[in-house]
Length: 114
Length: 115
Image 1 (cartoon, rainbow over the protein chains, first blue to last red):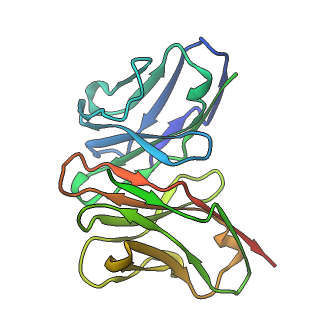
Image 2: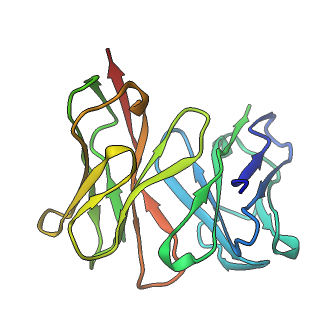
């Protein structure tokens, strides 16, 4: 089966611009997560979708970040406007059953804001 | 608040030598515990997990980890390291009690393997 796909793999944008990251989960996985790793620090939870609903968005840093999952399939994470501190690697993961933490991670999108 | 500490930012071992990566966690009860590995250009891959039962857990690629409640530790070990094990390793905890099923990660330990 295809894994979790993220694109772009890399993005370099200027401060103040908008960037949209996309994640395609494994087909049939209702649970989709976004995580972020900034400056080589911990990987931090951003949010969790169950189908198209936001189950937990407690990790979203501020209102410049908007995540959507229309139709419960792929998800997008938009950053608008981007700031320097948003640079990092954004990971997406999906799972069939949230309770056993059986995540499959994508390879991430490396975002650089200059 | 839950937290995960990986005290070693990077470790270098010789190929064929044994490996132990340290992990300590802070949590009020017994959390779910995980080790992930990230090779260059790859996503995070689950090596092993502990939910309950036997405190010595076997994982993929010859790795094992031991849960020690008294030390709040979950160290990862491998008896003989291969050059292909060079990667970054993340310890993580999950909170099964408060819902949400999010995972808290440590900052990672980068493993270098020398010939």
